[in-house]
Length: 296
Length: 332
Image 1 (tube, each protein chain N blue to C red):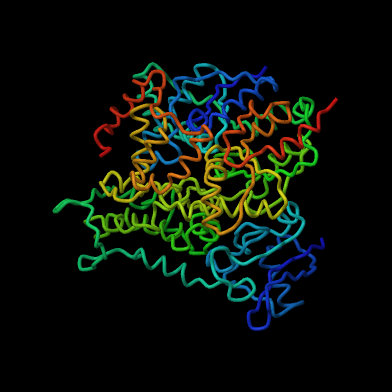
Image 2: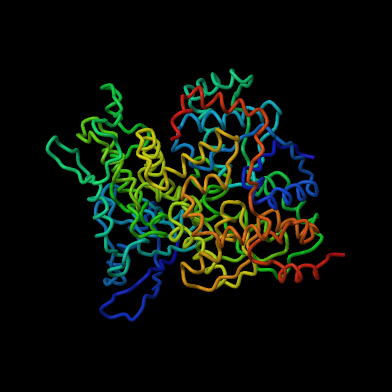
């Protein structure tokens, strides 16, 4: 078992509970021990920096300090949480002044951070630490014949000076994982583009057009399903898919899964266990196809 | 080494639609993509059109998409691209109309630069600010710099180093979504002037104008501008600094500012991001009603977030952070 301080982020604990459930499901199967941090706060949703930079440092410095106290690296399942925690970690490690003021705050609440924690997204923990061979061995339903469009989103790749998991110009980690499950990755240009979520409440029409264009391109490339490592992208791509279709004036109907849901299906998870009924676009047709692929 | 350049071609005077043409070349040590294109033009096909000038990553003329990513052709090594992609595929910049081959129409881009008034305002300069965010007689809080700091006015953000190459604009998710959005280069310039203590913008009109629709709060935070700037500038970081400055100066009329404040307030109250509360704070009840079909659809699927969130454990720690930073009363 590998231990991680588990940081699901807010959406996975609220409207996107299926992400949390499927993450816990696959963690058990892959030998990942998720240590909960009920004290951890919201990272600030990628925008709290625009309210007060020090607040971003303090609340995320606190989360890093909680993980350090536990003695584990942080496992994330949200791109934006990954970037925010990583940005703060970089700043606290490289800027003594920022570390000093953050520790001055942390000392008031009985914590201290010395910069030893690493922030890692589930996708790259599976690729780099669990290993794709172990993942392959755990597969009970091969995804053979399923065309999967990986939607990386932004904050797991950019800025590459902070999130250093993959080649920012031509990432491959997601595709490698999809292949390990037996599925065929769909190649399309918008796989690394923005889903628009950050402005969905500011300018819905323009924001959802980004998600809509990505879905349309994946559909045109014959994808059966789109998968994302980020619950914020999932909101744009699934919850707002109908709005996006209207805004780009195209017919869209592509199931969109959270990354651990796709893995969960291959590891034997049922429709109910993966929480697919909570999605806007049904995954049932593809699921029926997969259920015929049981390995002996 | 023999390699192929695959170039986007389109001459609206003779071509019905765009097409790609391939040219086979031999490289030489240190050959750049611009060297390759100049070789094509000189030796194979004189009709291939592209902008170029300094060949030293200073003028910003030769920006184009190279294997799908916007780069300066003069700063991009052929060998590195071939190693990664096996080909040199070149396309014109994104987010701009194409004039011919790799040449785009830059007019809108420069109109947006002009729109932010890219010069220091003098005492008699008038800046159009029909929206008065500050109270009568109230002055915007300008930073005060010591002489040594002044030399590095923009810190690590280096916004004065912008060469207007349009790499950020070509990759910007915000412009893809909304062609009217000012874009990263213009907003980085807005920051550069709004932070300059010599600028005679006493009533915060730069930030007021920048907060209007299609301004700084339309940034989608995709980080592409920082990632692909050939000069190491991070427009997105300075856009966020302007968000903070606008909010701290009570310039909060935009939905974007309300959204940020809503998230901060939610964290202060529960330690969490309260999805319902943030939506109401950002767009108001009328905005929620517009999206009622999305909310009802999600509710029927069981995706409605809880109306009342459970506080995180040790919530007092978060209150201490807000208190320490004197942020408790600044929400409204």
